[in-house]
Length: 292
Image 1: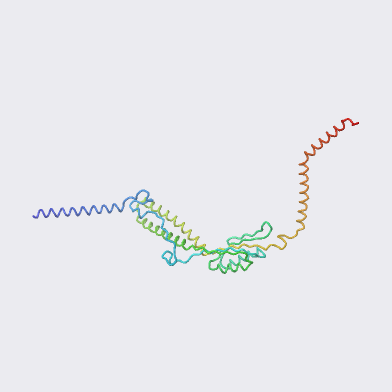
Image 2: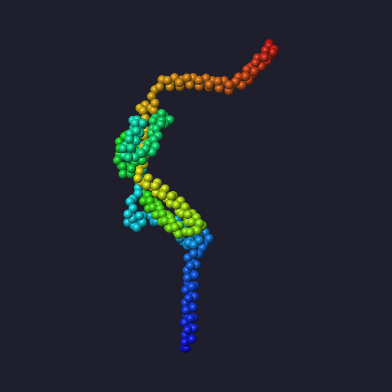
């Protein structure tokens, strides 16, 4: 092989290597800044659609005792109680229940006091107290009267709590990634598209954050519903009332008068027909010749 042939061979090999590198570089750049496919959710030109795609976070699995999901998370229990008390005075008992609630650091949700159709007083008081004071407050409320019914419930919402917390973390991470992309955006269209994605994720974040606040409120504060009623008086729900008896007598008198008026008006056509018939009979009898 002479010198000229060797030089030509080296030049050909170098050309092939340069062409291969150029093709590889162009293919890589094309895959990096390829426009987002249709329906990608508003991906920005110049950025991969995978980085800007909005996807709801996948909830974690429900926690199991000793399992990885929810491990180390405190059990979340919503405590509620419903009880009915028989008391000597509804208003006084309601005030006592409210005082027990306030002393325990809770607050009164609703209070309703009235009388039923028999004139017997009744009341309902709904209180919210710290969960760690549930047993002591319940015992104090029971001491204000005679317990006629009592039921307590404990709803375990640990799985729901862990699921909502996982969604919050996922949405927060998405917003943080979008903010990083926003810093590198230079075009107005890119900034608007990224902001649109941030707003969509922020809406979902606000929703699950509200769920978390509601769960914390239900777990941190237990609910006790107290129904108050007075015992029925001996001999009936009401005693003798002389004025009521007079009023009922007058009402009965007018009731009888009303009944007579209704009866007379109802039979008046029969009376008229009978009178006409009787008058005709007397007239016929008067004109009839006397019998021998």
